[in-house]
Amino acid sequence: MKVSKEVRVGLLAVISLMMLYFGFRFLKGSDFFSSTHKYQVIYSNIDGLVASNPVSINGLTVGQVKNIEILQDQKNKLLVTLEIKKGIVVTQGTRAVLADDGLLGGKLIRLGINYGKPELADGGMLVAANESGLSALIREKTLPVLNNVDSLTYQLNRVVSQFDQTGIVLNQTLRSANAAVGTLDLTIAENRAGLKATLANVNKLSSSLIETEKQLKPILAKADTFADSLQGLQLKQTLGSVNKTVDNLQKILGAINKGEGSLGKLASDEALYRNVNATTASLEKLLTDLRENPKRYVHFSIFGKKDKPAPATETAPISTTGMTSRVDSTK
Image 1 (cartoon, rainbow, N blue to C red):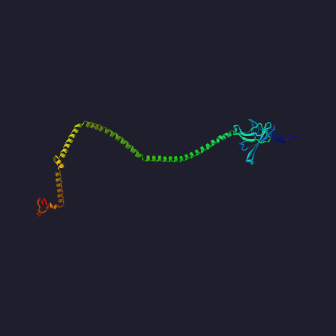
Image 2 (image 1 turned 90 degrees about the vertical axis):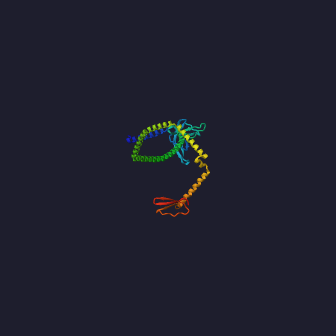
């Protein structure tokens, strides 16, 4: 009986798929030629544990993780089924420690056999435990640092926001400075002619000062000569003359104090002082009466008419050209 080509291709495909399946399972750790025991353990968090992760004792792989189920009726705890080689004795109270598998971040379960205890039956429950692996340590050490980084970032954000305000103020200041520079340039441009004239005047003033300095040098030389001449004067003779004059003045004042001479008598004779005062008073009265009654003392005649004689008075005629006058000596 001949087998058709299609049947042979189909059988070859089935055999290939079976070899691929069992080869994949074998690579995952499944041993099809030896029996195993199954144990269970419940974890609150498996931290990335997956099926086919190894189970080891003292670093030796003795099984693998068979299955992981979620227990929703127990607050979503995780039931992990382990396959352990049949020759490994697992006792009651054995701890299934979930730990890190090297630096790559994988997970494994490390069995801690409780020696001296009875053997655990197939399907029994192991004691769950967690080990602070490298990632846990990194997390433990990193969290405070991250918190500090967050705080630092917050502070930096505040500083940056303040710098934003400072940048706005700085931009305004720069704009004001640019405006001031532009105004200054415009002012200089507008007053450039005046500045040139001012500088020219300053140059002229400097030239004038130089000429003035040249003219002052001879004057200062003459002043020095004049000072030398003053120093050469005979000051002693001048001071002697002044002293003689002061002595004479003192003698005159002494004579006046003693009542000698006219000034001395006038200063010391009280009767003479009273007579002079009386004469002065009489003269003041006469002048007052003359100012108030001038006709009593002076008479004018334009046509040469003879005036009537005043009774009980002595007259003294005064003749002028074309007119006569009479002055009463006393009333």
